[in-house]
Image: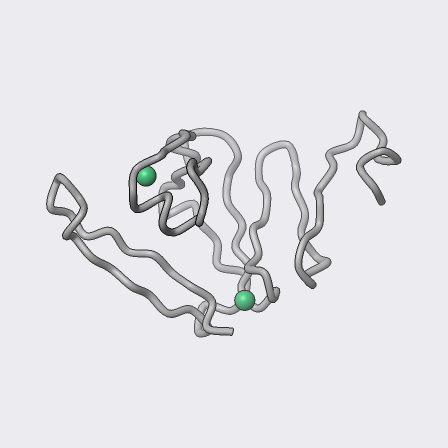
Length: 110
Ligand SMILES: [Zn+2]
Ligand SMILES: [Zn+2]
C-alpha cells in the first residue's frame, strides 16, 4: 500500500528494507533492522515511552550520518525483543559522554 492509497483513518506503517511484518497499534509499534533479522516492539506512549527528542550532538550525527537525529527513549522493561537478539553486536564508549556514563549502541551483525 502506498502512502497515497493508505486510508487516513487507519494507522499506516511504511515498510523499508526487506522486512514486511512490521506493525503498529495505538499504543505500540515495531522497529526492524534494514535486513529484517532483528525486530523489537516498544510502547508509543508513557510510561514506557520516556522521551522523544531531536539531537544534533556529534555522536548522533556520526551514528545516523546526518545533521540531526530524531530519537526516542524507551524504558528497558517495556522493550520487547521479538527476534534476532543473538544477531546483535554492541559497541559502547564514554569518551564523548559528559556524564561519564557509558553510551552503548547495538547493531545488527548482518
Ligand atoms: Zn539486520
Ligand atoms: Zn545526540
